[in-house]
Length: 256
Figure 1 (spheres, rainbow, N blue to C red):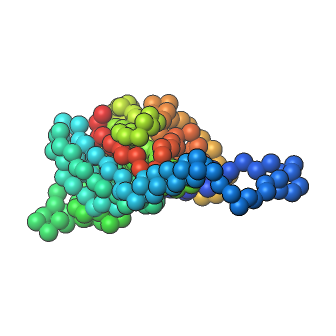
Figure 2 (cartoon, rainbow, N blue to C red):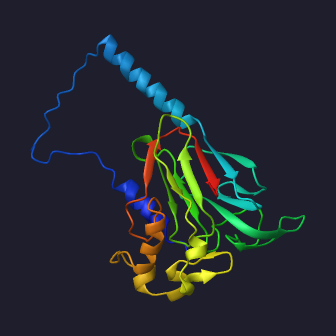
């Protein structure tokens, strides 16, 4: 069950410009003249904005785990990554509802069909859909409100590998990282081969699945949040979404 993406959408839609409602009418008076300095500043801003929007964002997806990981990405497909290998993925500006995640213990035939123990995407090497829980998920939306990118790492769909999601350009320093041994410390009721389930998968009720907006953290979401404070841990979690200027490039690391 994929419940994380509405958080990113809600966060982005909440980013609205401030309006002083105490003013009953506009105090702005248009003018037909523009100084050379003002025009130059405007044109510089305009062309800078166009440059950022026109260029794809690059994601370097790196496997630092001492075993093979099969990266999944929508958009992007998938790639087998042995220890130390990196997949360079270009993503079109304006892309939203996007994910990158690790898949473990996979077997694929020559046609790219098979299965994975965690993060499986309908038995395909080249993913066309989100991965099956449990999986640690890097989520992002590019060039959204005010041309900002928004990104997070979520364990709402469970956890299979530690991860880092960080910018690599543009001077942006926001990042999300967790190296905790979630699988080793996973509560017995959430344990599953290769990972740690999200509680919704196990209990399938309003308290843990948050079918409506009226829900909050639980003892199990706190288990994840205490160990990975940068990560989103339940549907209404608003503490793990970050932003960078559009045009920023990123790095996703499995087992940082």
